[in-house]
Image 1: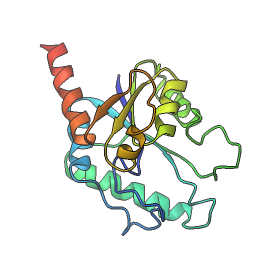
Image 2 (image 1 turned 120 degrees about the horizontal axis):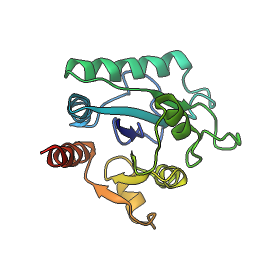
Image 3 (image 1 turned 90 degrees about the horizontal axis):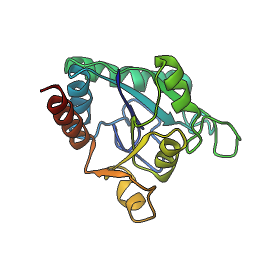
Length: 183
């Protein structure tokens, strides 16, 4: 199985320090929906792992979060692709859970769901926490320059972190590399 794991806010859709609280505020980053669809059509399973502390903070409810993810699935399906498992951490930063990135709980959930070894699997994020979660499960940390990516890049990155402009560039690289491997 060709598995790719994505963070959501700042990778797939625009991020906001005021939180994404409604479907109307959930705005895809240009090229991200097409990138997911292209990856799906090229045989990749695209899963999502996202911190959603806005739930714990009372900014939005689970029904709203589900509606955002339904919108993501709908947009990708319109492009001929499919989104795999979407997992989220609804807890606040001080909850002490094992799912909130940089802890690897959500990534382990995805691994169990797909019976997959995460060693070397690309985890694409825009924050230090995303990269640290990838390292915790021996995944390949991948930083995109969208969302908080520029700020994250200005700090120390885990050794071996790959850096791309955006999700579309990640998709182009993965699709190109798998075409080379299959030729």
